[in-house]
Image 1: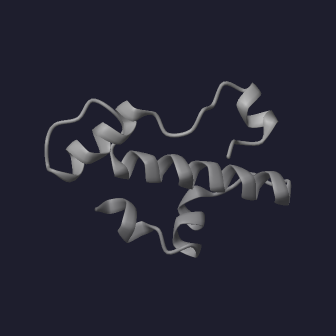
Image 2: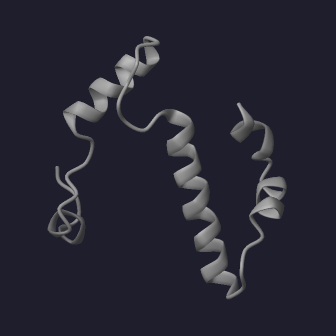
Length: 77
């Protein structure tokens, strides 16, 4: 099983062992030197807002986007 050739040619090879180790450390409550879960969520939200902007052809109001998608409480945690 492999990623699509366009993904493999980009240099992305999926989850790296050190990323998995950092996730396990974070879940154990240990200090990690990589993105934490909330930072990853912010990245996904930013990408989602960017995609919505591209589809609509309009600038995205991130505050309204957070409210419309019920993300405010989640991102404040």
